[in-house]
Amino acid sequence: MTQPKIIAVSGKGGVGKTSFIALALKTLLTSNHGEILVIDGDADSNLPEVLGVNVKKTVGTIVNDFKRNMGGLPPGVDKKDYLESLIFSILQEEENFDLLVMGATEREGCYCSVNNLLTKIMDTLTKNYKYTLLDLPAGLEHVSRRTSKNINHMFLITDASKMGLQTAARIRDLAKSLKSNFEHIYLVGNKVTPDIEPLVKEQAQKYNLEYVGSIPPDEELAQYNLEGKPLLLLPETNPAYQTVSKIIKSKITE
Ligand SMILES: Nc1ncnc2c1ncn2[C@@H]1O[C@H](COP(=O)(O)OP(=O)(O)OP(=O)(O)O)[C@@H](O)[C@H]1O
Ligand SMILES: [Mg+2]
Image (cartoon, rainbow, N blue to C red; front, side, top):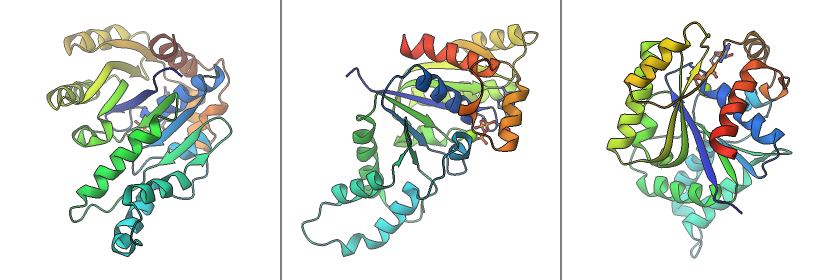
């Protein structure tokens, strides 16, 4: 098996991160690239709905229960093995991919040891898949946490706004200053028309970000999201899908 690849999105709120992940998954599924894990890393996210998956349990609920019962573990039971088995048990297995939803965790008190265990478990888990797609929350906080330490392909999504581009540049700068291991960082414009594209490209260059494509404003995609229809069901001819597919194929699978 080739090296597992971790692909993530980040950027300002509402710029289209979750939609990008859904269309990237659709691309990997149609080209049949094998074992895929999708992680919803945003506590407020709607990725399961966008993918048409009904999720029963999140890592957050499991970890919270685990923290409460930690003292009650029978002697000889390894904490990491136990937590790992709980997390494996809530992996949502779909026909062609697995989904794990992080959900919200209680942050009070220092649970550093549990967080360290979680990081190790996630490292082990992602090694079982050819591709991991990670939907990260808006903003910069995740960069300073370990969740986004080893990402092979980071797609920063922006709309045609200064704030969108600035947020993307800040995430890149923070990742560099913290020595987070983002192997490749790209910028993708979303809801960018051909008219405005040259300006967005110019700004990307100014921030020294590699601009890899413009997803057009897409009524069909917006309508699917509005009606709660899974984006995986968009037709192959959908322009937003075709753009994401081209980006993923050129940067990841070829
Ligand atoms: N190319 C597009 N054309 C039209 N509408 C779009 C496009 N991309 C995303 N949208 C719409 O914009 C909204 C936000 O998209 P999405 O949920 O993917 O963003 P997000 O970055 O994940 O948001 P959040 O920061 O809240 O997680 C959705 O209603 C979606 O339908
Ligand atoms: Mg989202």
